[in-house]
Image (cartoon, rainbow, N blue to C red):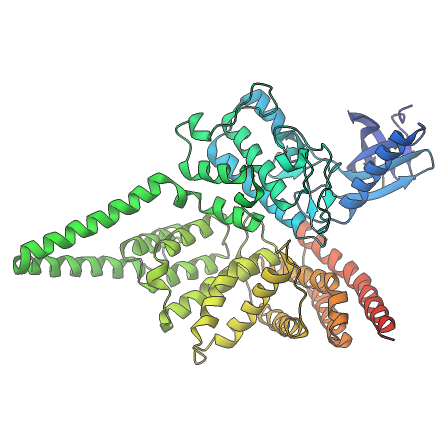
Length: 566
């Protein structure tokens, strides 16, 4: 019997109406009487008898407990679980909006740029799941399980068949997932891993771009440009790689896939042809200059002079010019002379002064940087300065789809790595670049690498802690409009990192007091931050609550490790 409208659960949650129904669960909309906030309530009945009922109830409970551990903007939060003996109520975020599956049914294939944005959001949340210890494999990515909120952000729902990756399980799979989206190994005897989710995301992108439903009996996979020639060849290659039948032929992790999605135009045949045309034009021009000989020297000199003068005018645009005009002028200067670092530095400075460096700004910068990478990346001081400013901009200012401290550190890592590899110890920012590089290297080796079996060494942990302390000190000098949020985001990631690695820190005998001292410093700095925005307040409260819990966790981890040694 369904719970009646008007029922108040646990003295807090008033049932307003039924909004969904599954095999053994009903979903209601409820109002939190204390917070005046709406929640979704999943009701799970335990009254039926038999093994099948027990399995389903346990599966639904496992889903709730799995979700309760997670914290990502694209995942619904589980805030409470109420068990009255006969019924279990799971209190979770109420998600307004429509599923991508419903949007496909009503409107058909979606625009390429829209699908790209969605794909990057989904890739980000999958990367988060895969970065858990142990990794969580979602196993049911499809348009019906993705909700589009009114503001344009996505939420991934239905974790009923998600599982934690067990490295030694060679065969874990029964027929789970949705046929058409699920990879071959998910319907056979092989184990699913992070590449299984990449396959399903590829099929989801394919469906969104073509409107062709892979669940249909007569469905035959074909590259997206066979459905629509206007679609990108680069994107076609990405989707074909995601959906390769052999997992070894797919992207091996979501970091690889995210990079490909952010640079899909560089894989496009049209892009490659354009680059070849540029090279051909250069060869023709060079050949003509030889043929013309000395007769053309004067004209060439004049052209070079005009070229140089235009560049200087572009990079010396007035400081009082509007932000958009300055950015456009610097971009045009880079297009004119892509190996001169001055325009890049001016562009980064404009981003920093404006306090804004999101996906659009990152795309503007990285497209030009990558186009001239081979000529730019030298050991000259000019390049080291560019690498440092690029790394700092990504590390502290990046505010794209995934602006977590972890992702910012990973995006900044290659720039600081190039400074360290230069071995130019006389460069003024060499030592601090080493610190940022150590953080990025730690995340790369031990946090986001879902298949790695390497354990951090004592040296790795010591380098990480020293580097994190430097970052905490460095961020104090930042005065961007959203500096408080930047600090809080970094603090939150650091305390979570310390908690996640508490057993490793204890096992290699890192001084417990140094770990607890860092937590205390972050707690004090968090308390002193004056914030009023709801998002920042939520992060601040989360940090303060977490610090208290994490101190206990770390104390217990060190105590347990000491007992094992005796």
